[in-house]
Image 1 (spheres, rainbow, N blue to C red):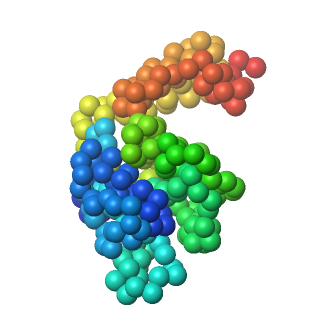
Image 2: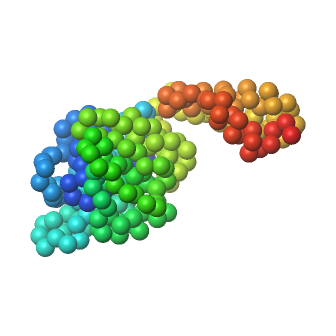
Length: 242
């Protein structure tokens, strides 16, 4: 996190995978220069994004290319490494129409233990990359930064990590929207009530009410609803009613 409790999100990847296109798509503005020429981005570019009430510092970075002999490009890569190390959340962009490169497989080692989302870009093009067992805190998110397809799924995945405690601020809360803060507090109150009811041996229906209300409170932020499958999963894990 930065000093203002904003979530630092770094967009990383090898050259020409669509990092700057994704940066612009998330901002809904043409902030970063985009060309088909690899290595266009030579420095980090930062912009603040309001992600459904969560203040985010979005960082576009130069492409990781350890083979380059260009001095300026190498300096850009070093700044990309610094941005990766400072980020609370990492968006690792992969070209879904091409095979993984050696540089990308080496980059995977840097993400072990980090809050990261693999973004499989360019799904509007033919071909599919074989991701194998790459590290990520969530399943890969397929999208097209060009058309916007899958962008809402990526934003939802980012929110799940941030609001789910996977991305933690050392200085304070990351939610600036008062309505979202109230929704989170209601969700916490209902979850605590459900846990108390379960521990006291109350019927499953009593527990279900608070779990549903807690999920609905979170849904006010994420736009998602509580499904019967989710409740069944919770019941099976806690053996409610058995």
